[in-house]
Image (cartoon, rainbow over all chains, first blue to last red; front, side, top):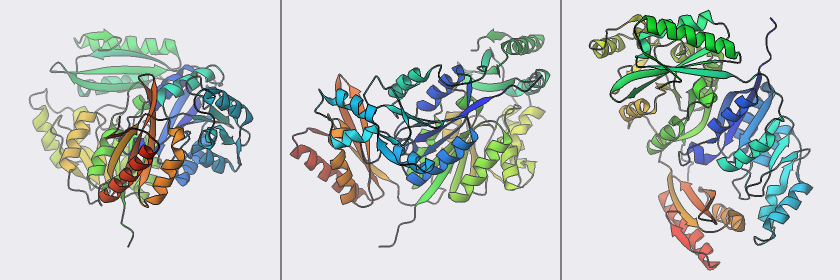
Length: 252
Length: 252
């Protein structure tokens, strides 16, 4: 069998508010979940501060070794919004006011006090970029080379992802199945290792918890091959039940 | 005035469960907030998969350019817990069973079915490491060189951070102050830029929101110099009020 091509993406989360602990990031989980549906694996994430050098380094490293690169944050109208300039610098291109974006913003702000210079900053894009429609708040996302520049506000990014759905080439989505068991993961560590080895191409994650005064764990089996996931889950269930344990399909 | 030394830390979040979108990370915000109280700035975060090469690359890059490096995840008893081995490889040292950790785990599992081989995996540390007490669930955290290896489960990491409180050298904590205003940030972008320029050493973050049908923003002023933060907030408030805006101290 030829090796199946795996499509990967990376994400750069740009923002001092995440690094200061002020804001709880929601974009990693949101983008990871969306990417998986597109058949693309989120391979790595970096959270960097609002400094040009930090953004340039992360963007240039990650765009080179992944099929796609997403960024979130730093595309608003204020002085701390430097993402577009930093990415243009990373690509070695200039920054231009995108004519379509100017039209979109003029329409959006027509009833909101007009398109000021600060607001027109949100029409700036790295030269050669196209726009990703934002139906929530006017200022568009940006697509340039293999980079997708998204908003920091999660529900705006959700809308931009929606616009991109089905437009990025990917492979088979990773399918996952979960079983749960009231068992300490340390008691079944060998069993999990054997199950992973016996089903080449799956990865098994073990996620312990302590709930209602009892120790339990969920076991998540992942692979692009749905039939393989099912077989692995069935074998794991059999092995757990052979030890007298109650297995809960779908997880606890 | 001599430049004040800024102490920095980086964080490597290890885990396919974050990259798959299954689990919402909580450790970035928790560790960022704790570090700030220690006078240490979280400079960068990487989320990497459960692969040795990915962990080694992130650990070696980040430990070299920060005072401290924290990791979360991958220190349990199962096959996907490879953090200790990967960090030992990054440091070029072997892995040993730490005698104190063996004692701790033997005591912990004495009434929980005994210390199996899988459980004893949690006593493995890079050679030369010391332990960070875990009062929640037995398996300790690990301190080696400038690296602090913490659990993936946030409340276990919380306990480990508590044990480390006050033990890491830092500088002055960054102080922040917030004001809120029912204004589109794009209308005050120039004012924010001027305020940041006029108070050297502060950074001003602008965090817009849409709530109760209205547009607003919080402006967060940060600096290790509390008096400077107060002056900047006062000047910003005066400037906003001069434009007839209502300013809400502490943010909206």
